Image (cartoon, rainbow over all chains, first blue to last red; front, top):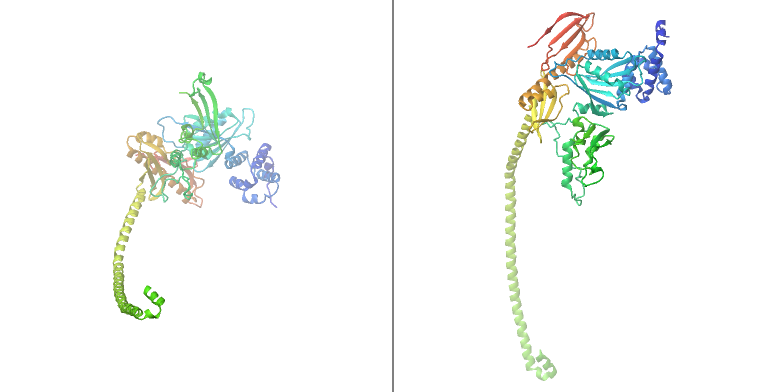
Length: 353
Length: 267
């Protein structure tokens, strides 16, 4: 029989109901297959405690047991927020991420970025502006931090169920934010980021995707990492054209030169590397109507036409890469399509020059 | 033969003289034939004999040729081996030379800066090292065009590549590469030291090592002795010069009070 000091028991029972409910809903979100992994990553409940729980029971009961354990451990709101961050890190594709770019003034001193200073500065700025806000941090990889912000107002407590996330890599000008529904707080978030990271300006990039790692690859220019060296054992040969070498010799490809040209042009533009993953590209057109035919109603129109063209795909850039080889489009593709990773944009506004 | 027929039609009266003449004639032709037969036989015989002689001669000639050919083949095989080995050694030596050159090209990376020509320009490889330890390699793929362009690279985003290229890429490619080399080697060296501190001195560290992307600010708490009652010190290392692997400022505090003064090591 365990002897618990009376004070602890009393304190445990005093965990805020809202916090308890927050725990319950956060743990309920976690799929059963990932439960153990996420709890171990969280590292709040000990091995022994986890062993006392039956993970094969119904989810509702399992969640109840876990919440009780959290209460016993006197878990705080911050611990719950941390668990929420870990869940989001495992399920980052469930959020849509925007990219912000910061800039410094010219001739700045060497950036001596101190993570602890950044965190405390960031939190201070938000708390000064909004009394009711929950800010939590979790370090990731070598040089990144995940920030979770639950927004409240002057009179209302923070809403823990609609938090915003910011992922920031130290000493870089880029920050990735999950599109928060509370758009009014965006300027404040931008300000806090800029000042805490010792930048002067922040600008929202026209780049958005669910795939955080792809966004990172695009802005950090890490998507093309194939380099020719003398040390590589497999030389960079000319790609076989996808025309099967074992194909019947009675089959003659009439347009072999054209196929080769298309393959070559595609390879020059898209490279041999796996493309970063985006789901769409959006073009807002405000251009006057252009036509080869003389006359016609639209040709006389002075005002520009406004329309929106949106390309969607589970993997947009790979789809664009395969258009010309599949014979659906001419090669080379329009630079408006091929400039997406280079320019770091998938939202375009096109106007007449 | 009509004579014979007339004789037989006439009967025996005429058979006497004509028949006799006929008989004589046939006798003569027979005997002539007989005389000729041995002659032709002889002729045949002699013809065959000469043929036999010829064939024998031919056979001997061919036999001799075969023997000669065999002998020459034997002789040539014993001669061919030294020729072939000569060819093989030539081939081998060429191959060895080629592999040697290839190895030299591969070994160039140990000089710190090496490159390989590409279809559009050159791919430069900057290999970093610190205190005799070979560390990461970084690549810059250049397009030979006016103006010189960087096609793609593997330089980390927190290294000021844009600044350095803006200053030197178009005017002095050598300076560009050397400056980049400086920054990357210093970053690699600092990163290596921070990693080693974290792993090799784990017992001395009282908490996690705080660092940033450039590894130019390190903050940690350590004890002078891994076990025992020694007091923890807080150390803070600043590297203001991104081209060096040694800190420019070091602060050691004990319980918030500075135990040692900071010292600055500017050149």
